[in-house]
Figure 1 (cartoon, chains in turn blue, green):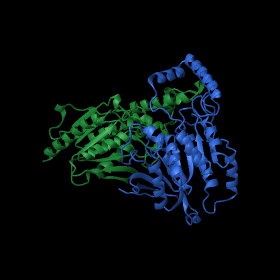
Figure 2 (cartoon, chains in turn purple, yellow):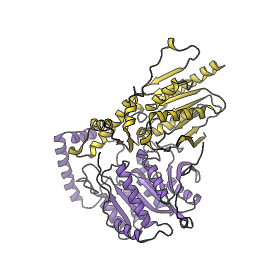
Figure 3 (cartoon, rainbow over the protein chains, first blue to last red):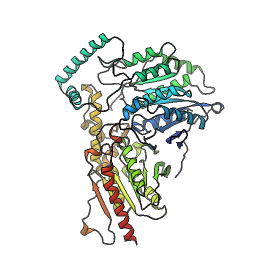
Figure 4 (cartoon, rainbow over the protein chains, first blue to last red):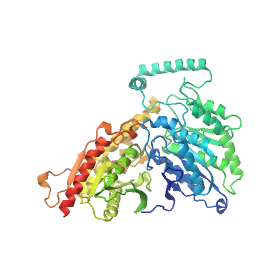
Length: 320
Length: 262
């Protein structure tokens, strides 16, 4: 059996007391100048309990794509996840939401940077992986940027109570249920107005503080939003707190946060539309914020303009 | 315990494999895992099963199907026949390791169908199957139904499509994307042909080849090894109630095969 093939290498990161397994996608840059300076790498973290391939192997697709563009890419399984050793706490979601993976993730960033001679790393997280990426970024100066896919900033319940689940199903599948759901949304909207711009009590305040520390000094952040039920584009469902608006405010004037909403996909971004949108928008963003040697050209300025307009450039999903 | 990940070449691609070495092994088990989108859900308990066996002196080889997970290849180009051929390559590699030991095939869901086909062509000394469907189409259909249910949560009423709409699409020769995997019309068509073989009764087994087969229908509690369960919660639950019995069965087969070979 081979440890390495043309484009990929299986790696074990064993420094700092934790053994982590992963896959390294070698960059395939045709520009020789690109190799004369240290490059920035891209490191994918697990989304909740998913292995490092992610839903529909989408992380493999993105890592291959970014490597093809000249950015060495890494996908690792944090301890206890995927192929890595270690045990997981029974309350995995609570563990992640309290930054349980932050220390090991930031250690692994350091290890990857040293071992592969990189100038730094851009951390990629999806869903619960966003939480780990943000808490890790706060701890490691080698983190040069963040790509965050469909983040959440509250403390969700791992398992919803049965009564609530039944109510949700009723609201989804019956006409009366849908009306009741709309009325409920409006009541919540009213209550939300009374509360003003304060986050609700189930907000992950530690994560919001961390976000402010990371984003407000100007760390480049690319944030993707997927469509959600009863939501309006990147705006939340009526009555829900607008975390996106809140975190953009926290990032302040120096913040370099780019938000992209991707139509025609779902929370995983794993379908064709989602994965190609993430690929295209990320590659544009990388060219603007992390250009390779000899790559700063008029195209970058154009891309920069496109990104700053924050317009979606992805067509609606076609089912056929 | 030593775990060795690597790539094994097969025609046109490389398969991702993980060998779980055991100290003084008594048997080898080739794990034929769940299919495509089921992989991500059952990954953690599947690995724990591998480690559980390795701790009981059973060497384990697990792998990703061609075009799935860490293996290379394009999923949409793959057929059941390709995956079956890969199984032969893996079996040859695994069985060539020394010392010679009884080889047991263990398949889960669609993996059980692939394992069964290899077993009846003469591969392996015993076989354990977890929740084999009657045919591959049954497994694809249940995956499709679950995915359509989730899709409908996001889709406005007028744009909603039912499972039968997607099935019609496949039957008309148009691929369908399910949880990030492009299902080809050929995959759907072929899935009807990949059936669980009928198992001969004891009286029909040739006396010179007393191979044992164990089929276990996993209960709901075995989620996420089988469909269902809560992501981020069920992966960490204890599966010893399931592992212990089947590990004992494998050990018993190893002993029986060893005695028979002597």
